[in-house]
Length: 357
Image (tube, rainbow, N blue to C red; front, side, top):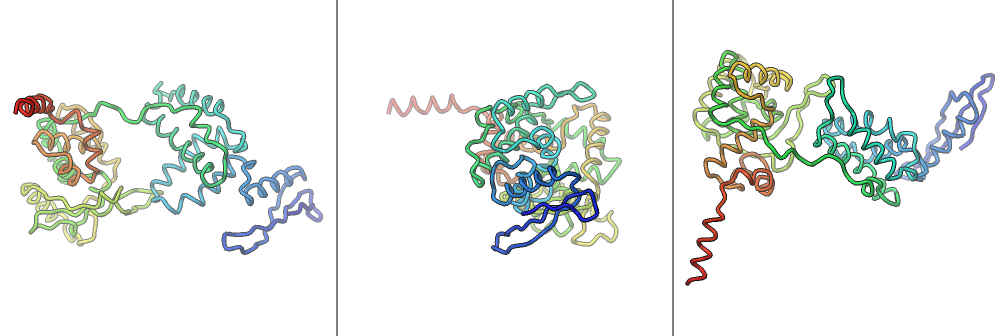
């Protein structure tokens, strides 16, 4: 690299060469530095980036991290991660050298996150605090694993928040039926919530459904994609996990309802979305329906929890429920264990019989 003063100007430029992953060398120029000192500082930072030297700033390392990680993630997943990078990490750590980020600075950042209050005086939830800590830790773990950072300061600092809220907000079947009655004045809303409650599908899975996904002879619906609204565009992606690709048996009454609904959608093509609304629309409808029905307002995702709770009450096993909702059975066991009836008494009685035989 070399630093030069621009002829006839009061600015400086840096001439530098980089070698890509194929071993090919490229020459580039960075212009417009007001002082030689600024140009030299930029040159040093570029050298650190080019060699993977962790004397580079956190901001520069994020460029490496983006190049490494972004191509491996779904667009909506990366956007969520990048939003945290831009709003929660770069303002605090952007100018720090990677090898100078210490546990004390992580703790100070954690305290600022925990002490934050919005205009309504609301703090970040414990689950959100846990999420942003984990995301920062993942970035630093990447530096440890691939760029020889000595250790992850997040590990020494310890975590914040908690993984999940222990209490789930769910509707009983009776509460849902009251809500559904309030939705009947808008067929699109009514049938959307019917699919959510009686099939336990995710919001994005619902909004990606097309007529071709339904087999009216076999009484099934195929869940094989998810809908997102990103940067003002409709984006269809693969489902959340590999397990999420599944075929669900649909109760006959609901198949009849969906057949009636499709008749209302004049001219709809087999591969066109059936529910051409957004997630924010469904959230507004939740507000309206809960208020009119006089039931607790729960989250859209809690309808999925309500479906799982209903299946548990009906006596179905964790593996059977997991297959239906696209979870691993261990997740059902761990997250909904408190809903399964205890069989401790039955176990003790049978052990007594075994001992006496």
